[in-house]
Amino acid sequence: MNSEWIPAIVVTALFVGFIALALRLTKVPVGRADPRGEQLATFVDLLAADPTDRLARDQLRSLLAGPQWNGSQYVPSLQTTQRKFLEIAPVVVNDNDGEDLFKWFIHHFSRMPSPAIVYEIVATLAKFVEWPGNEGRYRDVVVYSAATLKLTSSYLKYLYEVGLGAVSASHGTPLAKTQALGLGRLHYATLRPDGKLTLYDEQALANDIAARS
Image (cartoon, rainbow, N blue to C red):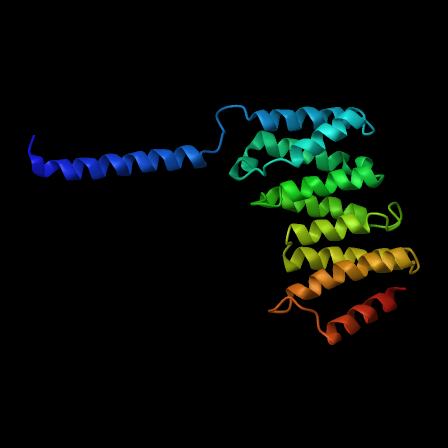
């Protein structure tokens, strides 16, 4: 073998090895089962059958408190599980423990969220905001979720408008107004380059809410 070829061969081998390692680290497990995804589906199914199942809640919370998913959350089977959880969320989030579980769900999937799932999360949050039904008790969950997901201005505007509708429907109860204020602040912040509200923004929010009370 010509000795002049050896450096080129070594460099090529190192390059191929690097590419293979990179692909292995970033590969999305579409073709094989993801153990965490299977566990998540199991616990969500148990909660769907019995939203008060304490063991299922604790196990699901433990799983969501672990390492976050990356691109694997785009796997169709995982999205199916996420949708099922969102379907039962209004029943699960009926106490402090359920609120905490929902917050863990939002936190866990806040990294590289699927656009389709974000849309459905917003629809679920809108159900929490609407009045009557929740009577403002989900306001912390709603505001936390909206902030954690870094929702776009259009989504935040929509939730804010739903919140203002809740103020009208409740005839201006303190809880409804607090909920609308939290959502309004998030929305108005997205309209500012530095993300900070001005006195004019606060006054506009106060006027919006007062007009619906």
